[in-house]
Length: 222
Image (cartoon, rainbow, N blue to C red; front, side, top):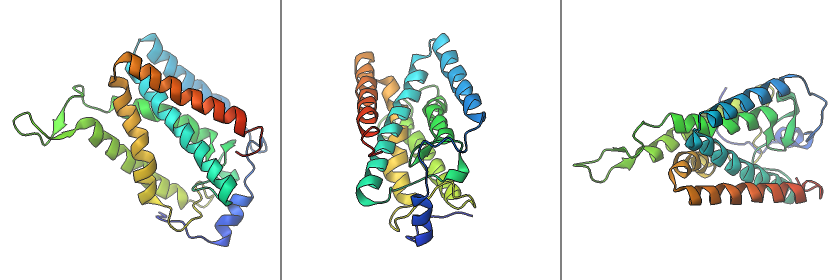
């Protein structure tokens, strides 16, 4: 049921080779429903003026898109990406490593992680006499990263190949360390930065995402 590493098999390579990026062959109405749910969540938080929560969502989601673009570039350059999603597991594949349902989940993941932090976000675990200890934000990021890495391990073992890992050296551990921890560090830390720094982060990240998509998709690279 759980897969912890890619197997480098020809079968895995064949699955990746068969992926149809941005094909509407499997498209259905769940696409619209999921989009409506995400819009509702974001506009509810905006209406409540929960700027930190909205920032948490956009921070993680922006970093997520940079990773997905990088993964697609790796696939273009080296033949296979680090991770892929199968045609059978989704209604629409945005880039070779991310489908619509997964992307929309990540658009909310940062909000969820931020809301799960203690009300006092300055709290430090294992502190002695108010000194030292580990930030609750860091602990929260590691916990969420571990949960997501394990769930990805489950997805990699599903019969419809929801996740496909080709490289033998890529799996749960590198996903946990190099991908999910940075995701949740962004969602847990950026919202508490001072407004100008927070705004600059979002503008730079999302500006870079927009430029890369606008250039690389027409060129057929991603």
